[in-house]
Length: 628
Ligand SMILES: Cc1cc2nc3c(=O)[nH]c(=O)nc-3n(C[C@H](O)[C@H](O)[C@H](O)COP(=O)(O)OP(=O)(O)OC[C@H]3O[C@@H](n4cnc5c(N)ncnc54)[C@H](O)[C@@H]3O)c2cc1C
Image (cartoon, rainbow, N blue to C red):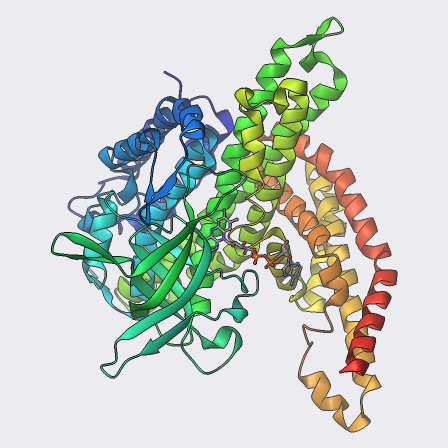
């Protein structure tokens, strides 16, 4: 039987050996104390393997074969409602039957209580069959998890400290409905005037005399926005920018006398380049009844926490698309003969395929490491506040949560950036490798490129990921950077293992580039301070850097630095695997062959270019200031 799990050795490595499951399973099963839970780690792992095998087969045999049919019978908007074609309906009926919508939800609410890591890994397999099916599927369990997470944060979900069981939650009815596969939701942020710049959101939330909230405005580009439950970011406070935003749960309709009465209207079905099995809609809100979630003015912060999970999802979605493209390219290269040889035996093609494979292994290493830390951060924080039995245990869990949170914050934008950018690159190469037939619809490879182009756009564009990663990296204290750089340079010459020396080399190039940008930012800042009146110098220095002016050199190189940070992170992740499992040395060596020259090039560009453009931009800003 074809299976996207059984045929993927790299993915299987993580499940069987690469992932350290024990801390995740122990937290998920609350120390194996739940009466209806798994009794041992092995029992849990056996169940996880079965889930992966099930989804691996389902994706390969039930989703992938229906993709051509979906392409010919697209989603429609009829009478103000989205209508799925029969092939899509059939897929989601089976998802419901298999209970996959509630995979990661607690058993108490009708779910299977599986780790989020499984959601991500199965997401890769869904996406290998069809990225947009994966995406719509994610807006089922993902939204229910968001309800659970947000209500836990605001204190409206309670757990029993002894058993670890969930006792009550504010969103019980909604989560149960989603777990059964009968409902899903969406994340409604984007508006015509506010995409990357969410501080420009104009959708308003207001309270009436009884204290009830209503939301009015317009949202566009909303994935699975034909669902019932909408998390809406809206302006509720007088402050402008992000501080004035709160988060609301808005049910799209109510049942009145057995009839659906819409409170949120579907204005338009967006007409897209690809991602055709997912409905992307424009929404109208006209005093739609809403429930405030969490505290007023905290909406952006809450959404950011949810978006980290969404960004990891896109990294895995990209991985699935890359895997599909690589395999199509590889199979074609094995059978197509030109000039007396199969394509795979032409050096140039062999090199391209080898690079694709290595890139995919790199993305998977980063995405799984990010998801592992993300899950441990989340579960440790939950246990700290709701399950710890004494202050000592709570302190220990809090420290663990903080450590994993830091690692997840660092890895998430890198995984999203690398996965998304590589999805576009690899699918384009896959078309090229197919020659003329790659350009034709019936081959199916061009569909992968059309789907992939979305990856660097949604859940925060690649540029936004790069800005986040850059600011995070350059936020380190200068002496910390200097110490890490000295250590990396020492490792580069002294490590006994040749591969470790090569990993240290990439790390020292990355740290060298960070140090260069940090010094450049400091120099500009000092210049700006001394250009001002002397009496204000001390206050200006104490105020710290001004992101609008001081970060310009770092922002100019943000994407290059992010690529370098990603290479360094992949190399050190693969090195840790190689230290435990010698068979991974090959994977590391292959990655280093590609990453070393790239890192040298990126370091060179970052440390030697950009001055001319920065001068021009500064001059343009001066002219603009003098005019206003
Ligand atoms: C198919 C699809 C599904 C989507 N699903 C959802 C959804 O479910 N929910 C939702 O809320 N939104 C969704 N979106 C919207 C998506 O998140 C936004 O399109 C994205 O955030 C970019 O915003 P924008 O389109 O307004 O582009 P802009 O913000 O105008 O950006 C345009 C370009 O400028 C770059 N840019 C912007 N600011 C900066 C900066 N400061 N520095 C450097 N570069 C910058 C961007 O990276 C981008 O390349 C979806 C979009 C699509 C196409």
